[in-house]
Length: 338
Image (cartoon, rainbow, N blue to C red; front, side, top):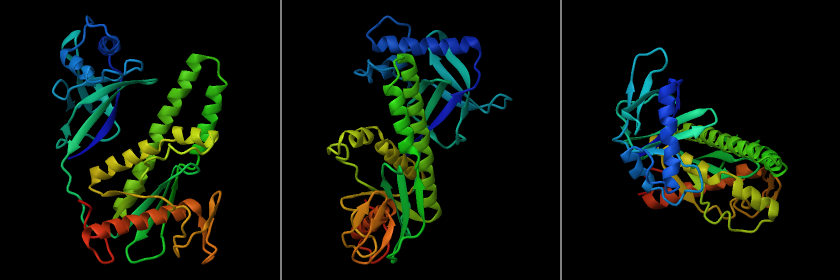
């Protein structure tokens, strides 16, 4: 069963309905702070009890899948409407929503949540469907997650020792994070600093969705599975003050998770491989090379290329080897890992 989240913005609900949702949202925060006598929908209380321990931060309004519904209506305002359960209105309130993609009738709806953003409320609708995993691939799309470029993806085809097309994604992310880090550090206004934190979070979320979508679409169009490096322990090593700060703020885990759930939704296999020495090994001859900033050069075969491209090709090759070993294949990927 594959699952994903469909982001649905509230579309101009009338004043009374919006006030009812805002009241339920505020009471949710009070309930998490320990106020038991707040007016809150009973099923929502049960959902929020499961989130105990996160009282210090504002929490979304979690709603159980059997307490709300999403329907299609032929209206000028929008195509989709959601009935939000609130304690102050019997039967809940109907809110017009605009999802980022069409909601299919065959999808199952799971527990979801309402999130407050600067532009208003959003319904983060969790949907599920049965997916048949693809079994045969022509090769791998190796993905290297880095700092200069958030993701570099290179095609690696079975039976070929050379890489093909490479996608360089998120090349401006380092400058973006540096800019807002210095703005936040030098700002004395706590409200403005909080707004900047929100902008960074929203930009990160949007960027990860865009990059993961491009990677999964490219893999699907070229009949490739996806190989990514295992990030275990990436933030545990001491690389200096500036580099440690970058590693702790870069959204590598978020991006990898987005790649995985989008690929699962399309039935595309994602394989994690050990990325040790992938940036130092020549993808052409396999010997140890030299990495100088963004360039890689092999003294053995004189191969010179972009360092992230070299690493992503090595990751793709390791992914092919891992799947071939698991399926007893000879030269081409025919079965996914079980």
